[in-house]
Image (cartoon, rainbow, N blue to C red; front, side):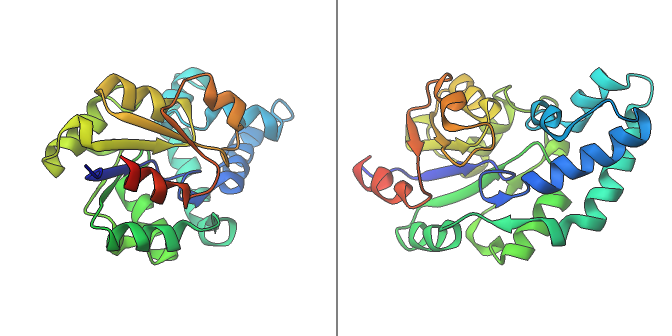
Length: 213
C-alpha cells in the first residue's frame, strides 16, 4: 500500500533560507542589542514562530520587532535563498507517482508563496498552512491535523517531513510518521534525538520510502 500524502515543512527543508533567516535576525537584534548576538546564537530561533521568539527576547516590543524582521527579510529574500539539491526533481517524480503534497509551516502564507514562486514549485502542492491558519503552531499537532482534514486522508497514510524538532514532534503528536532531513542546519545528529521514523540524506530518498510504504 503506497503512502497517499506528504506534508513538508518549508524553510530549511524545501528552500534553503538559512542565510536569510540568520542575517535577518542579526540585523534586527544588532540594532536592538548591539554586540550581544552572534550568527550561531540565532540557530535556536529557527523553528519557533517569530511571535514566540520575540515574546522571549523583547516581550514589550513583539509586534514592532516582528515588523522590522519581516521588512528586512522581504527586502533581501530573493538574493539570499537557494534551492536544496534534488528538491524540484523529486517533487516532480512524487507528483507522477500520484502522491498528494502540502506544506505545513510556521511562516506566513504569503512568504511561503513567495518562496514557492521563486522555486517555480507552487503547482506541486495542494495548499500551504501558515501561521495565520492555526491557533497553535508546531510542535502542537494542530497544523498537521488541519492538513490531514483538508486532504481527507488517514494518519497512517502520511509522513511529516522537516528540518527541526518542531516538525518531528508535531508529526508524532498528530500520530503520523515523520522524517528528518540530514541537510538541517542543526545537523542530523540533533534531529535523530527526536526519533523520526526516517532520515533523508537526500531529497530523492523519499521516492524509495514512498514505494516501500
